[in-house]
Image 1 (cartoon, helix red, strand yellow):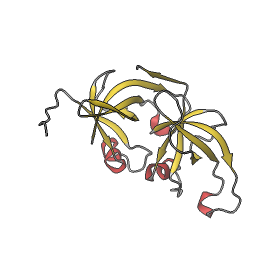
Image 2 (cartoon, one colour; image 1 turned 135 degrees about the horizontal axis):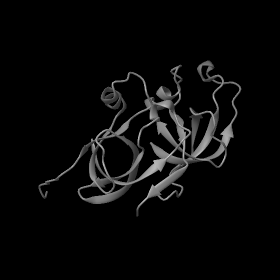
Image 3 (cartoon, rainbow over the protein chains, first blue to last red; image 1 turned 90 degrees about the horizontal axis):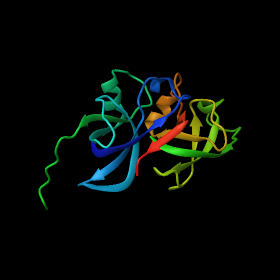
Length: 90
Length: 90
């Protein structure tokens, strides 16, 4: 999984049925506290708000398991809101 | 999923029969501030309404084939939505 920060959202009316009713959040990927140039458009199953640091699942079959659906074009899902990250200084 | 801009289309009459009837569009991936990043890809249009110049979002690898239900079409990039608005805080 990856760590990210919610930096915005995407508004979209014409979309694949799976995304009907789903929030589409823009998530900046973060690597030990530093932004790096990656971002992902994620759905969200934990109600993450903007600027929150979040845990992102970025793999299709696990994402489909979370939604309990066998076939769907889903891969990047916010699965947790991170309270604290403690890293040993290497 | 990533943001992209539809730059054109591809016509291939001779192609894998499983891709019959598939609209193939040239998509330029974009970064979070909508600037071009990386190489263009050819994506199947899973929403059947994308046109040149549209700001879209696309999904890659197996999830692209998942987007083309009901048939599991062998594509590796698929447009899964057209963007009305992107709201990103710097």
